[in-house]
Structure formats: C-alpha cells, structure tokens
Length: 112
Length: 115
Image (cartoon, rainbow over all chains, first blue to last red):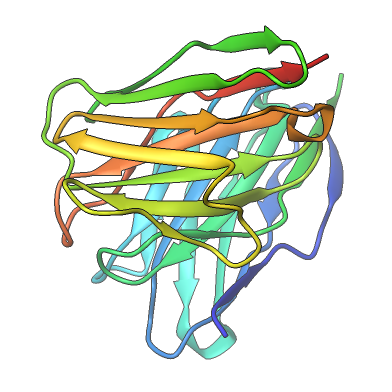
C-alpha cells in the first residue's frame, strides 16, 4: 500500500539553528512528492515539490528538500530557522493525476 | 500558482441541519477535485475524489449519503454535510487539479463546528 511517514511528531529548534524534517515514502514507483506548511486554523501552503530531475529541490521561504531513492526519503531542510517558521509541516506523495497521501505531520516549535 | 477558494472559511451549525461547503477554482478549469478531512492535531485524510460531471468516488469508511459531493462544473465542487452531528466537526479542505499531469492546489479550508 502507498504510504507516507513522518517519524517525528514534534520538533523543537532554536531560532537560527538548522532544521531537518524527515519524510519516508512507500510507493511502487517514484511518486510525486510535496511538502506543505499549515499554520493554525489555516489551509495548506505548498513549500516545494519533486516530480523528476534534480533530486535537490528548492522551495519558498528558504526551504529545500532532497529526494533520495535509496532511502525512500524526501527530507525537508532549512539552514536557519526563523520564529515565523513555527507551524505544522506535512509531507505528501502521489502518483501522476491521483490524490495525495499525507504523512502524519510534524509540529515545529521554535525557541527564541 | 493557481487559486482555489473555499467558502465559508468557518461555519457553526446546529445538530441535524445540513451544511454546504463550496470549492472553486478561480483561474483554471478543474477536471478533478479532492475533499479532505482533518481532525484536530491530525493529518489530512482523503474523503472523496470528484470528476466533473461524474459521481464522486468515496474512500472506504466515508458515508456517501452523509457527505454529498457535487461537481457540476469545471470550476465548482460542493460538499454537503447532511444531518450534521457534533462528531462531524472538523476542518474540511478541498484541492483541485486541471488534469492528470498537473498538481492539485488547495483551498484554505473550512472549519465546521456542529453544536
């Protein structure tokens, strides 16, 4: 069965520190992969996506993610976290044209 | 990116009443729309997939008679929660895509509270 897993439910980092949010997928073929951010009570904002090609993907707000087929991973990174980055982050995967399967989400808290 | 608008953003209704949520693609024609449900502090779960002009395909465990989905035009899909109960209180999010080869864009979500 297709699945997306985010192993970390909560992560706390200090402002200015680097960040890595983990995402693993299980699909028969390489899926389309996405990272979304959700602020409390809000909808989803797309940070970045991977369809094919370069495995290092740049997104908005200084985020990047690297697709690693050998590890079935698509981890999200940011070199220096800002207090405004505190939110819920969702990794999602899907095959072409199909609905997305979401990971359980990782809540990021940023310490001043 | 493309814009998907949901209305209303939040709604409170009494038990036993029905609530309609609209999902509109503002600057593209959406052949397919997806409806998700998100319980507090949980992830998004797909409820159903609707293709314009066709009946929606519901995920296992989702009551199609309770969650009525209509996708009558290429820019509008509606989700009607019929005979709502407090356990239906949730955050409902739609997404829309133009075709099989394009990504889906999300609406801002609708928070439903049934009292």
